[in-house]
Length: 190
Image (tube, rainbow, N blue to C red; front, side):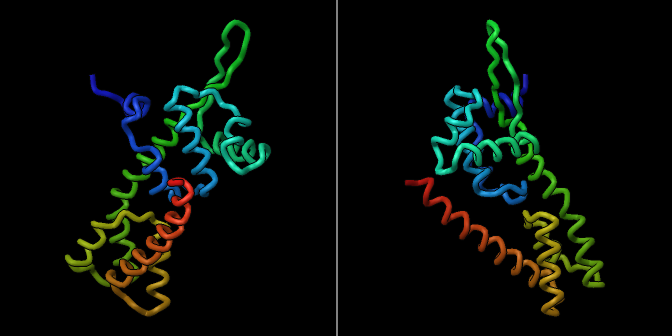
């Protein structure tokens, strides 16, 4: 029987934190959400997947109300799924981050399928067919549609009508994000 993503995840074989750090902007969440998801992931790996807001808050500098609001938002947006277990009349909430993993993986798949759309969009905006070199550049992209549109608009504003210029803008934008993430990572490594 073929293993499922969920079974592989539960065994701790997926680099969840790395996947999350590299792709959280595409999920439209902020760094605080990332830290909370990473803390929940660690709890889940340790077998402590009972949702305790006060426990999570004690591992951060956030107050309990802020953590509760953030966790509520993550549940509402489907990043955290909850299951209520009743044992001998006692109710306990268990959480799972498999839905977040599915979002991360589906975003990777969407990026691949969007490359044809990027090529069409660039051809329309540049008003010419793309060269094989330009198509090769696009094939190597792992950007979201929003990032490509932003890069294309910046190139048009600069009156630079080429995929190479759009590519440089996208690379610069990605490097800026990595600088922000590397600043944040220094607190995780301490």
